[in-house]
Amino acid sequence: MPSSRQIVQQWFDCIARGDAPAAFALFAPDVVYDLKGTTPVSGTFRGLKSIVDDFFAPWSKQIKGHITLVVDEIIGEGDRIVALAHGTATTVHDLPYDNDYAFVFSVADGKITEVVEYLDTALVETAAYGKKIV
Image (cartoon, rainbow, N blue to C red; front, top):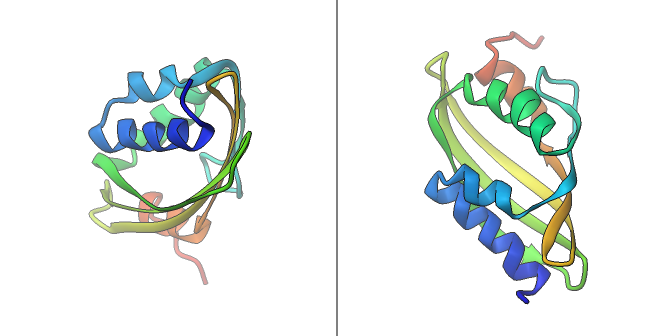
């Protein structure tokens, strides 16, 4: 069985290829995805259906094409892995979306059971949703 680090890297590789079905196949059936912040797509999503319907589908409507997500470093061993990454895209408002991320993954029995995502939420609000922050 691949290590937790390998599974996390595989998830990023799937995202980088634009292969969402393969990325989602790495999730456990009861996976929890927690996107920090108060943006329109922030929240805790339980199960793949909620992650796809309530987070990924609405988010993809804000981005032209798909986001290019690159892993800078993977840290950890065992069932908890941290990945530092950066992403680039263009939003539907024709603004650059260049964000930095820290992802905390929990992995059990070869599947991702939890993802906690930290990112620049002000950038999400301004670039992806066209809000002015004063």
